[in-house]
Image: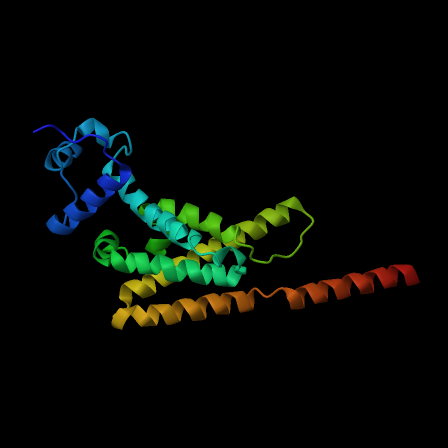
Length: 220
């Protein structure tokens, strides 16, 4: 039988996920994986250097597919940062739920929050999500020093990633129907975070401080 051609990244991911769920372990080699799915081994290396790289890309694809779904919404571009993040979370975890068996398999034994935070398997997701969180318009303090701006951005990205990991941990442990408790967790955690990030009172305090300092200098 002629080997399949025009193999795509999506094909490889789909075949790999099916294999591990059916056999409860990853393929023994790229050669055996290619043979089972009837394609040339060299085709695999056009997309991935190893099964580990493929596994990392799966969570990155969950992220990319979430953005594709959000892009279909005419309303989404006009959302504020809070609602963009809420929409992302709800859509992202719908995709995870549709693939829950694989996600649970992939993260088995690494459900500890500290492990999830630095887990190499989530490397692509971590990178993409941190960039996303930094670019959705979360209001920040207007700092004049470049070094302070970088620290603020890094803090926003890291705290966003920790929130994602906590939500993932909650979802993994959730046994409620339709994972409705995860939906509640998402809504409450995102809203709580934005309430804590409300910088309007801090802005007012800084403006007042600048006013007092200016008046004091003028008075002297």
